[in-house]
Image (cartoon, rainbow, N blue to C red; front, side):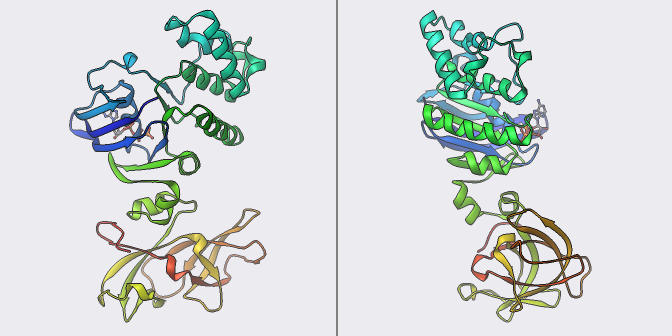
Length: 357
Ligand code: ATP
């Protein structure tokens, strides 16, 4: 096992910069997730660590070794892609043992390692089958087993679950987490799925347009997003953003008024903000800060997701997502008064998107 350190890694493709000045250090044995929208550069980072891509500038360390010039096969990393390719003519056992065989492990070591991997991944009963006799989820577990069997120093995963259906994806995700708990291999995992990021990561790296937006553990990023992008990317449904103007110790929008929490009373009249509030931090109450009208009701069993529009004069509608308890009866067109948890408001600079509170 080894730590992985990126120090100012930049990768240019002709005119465009795919990743810019990426710096972070994954300590030995931790599970880190790189997450962000399509094209943000997460695969480029992973491929650079694997040695499949070379950085235009910056330094990359695996353990204490500078590996900028070290070819992929000598980096002792294993990578699993979205399109896991198993060898079709080999059995599951042979597929898992392949990397060990290539490294001249003796037969006993190969057999023992295959058995251990199969037990951990719950595929012991499939060892004599060929890949085409397996379901997609089983094939993916074999691919994971094959990658980990040779016990690499670093395990790299690029959207490994995205070809699985929802149920298999949830199951395999839990298995991956367990696998990491048992083996403790330093793992870097790429996804665009914020649920995977939240549930798997020791630390999350959020990226947008080739730049790091924030690094932190899932709970603290969720509670303390650095900017508007992070606030709206993590959380489903996303954080609501309301363009407001501060005046007379309140935030104003469309003739409605949200009182400003005491701790913020250093603001100037006329200042504009993007105010962020999470869907679960509003409740239905006659003691309301905002009066809205229901436009869509989506019952989810444990709660109801309601889309509402803010009432009042406006140039274009302001839409919010609200999570309400399942015993509230609602229909489109209903008036819905909402009270906001004023201690949970985020304030963003509307120009830069940076969080100011
Ligand atoms: P996705 O989730 O869609 O796979 P990603 O976050 O993994 O996206 P990358 O594949 O790392 O993003 O790409 C980052 C940026 O670099 C994109 O703008 C992409 O178009 C560009 N890029 C990646 N590879 C190349 C290449 N070989 N040549 C030119 N541009 C590239």
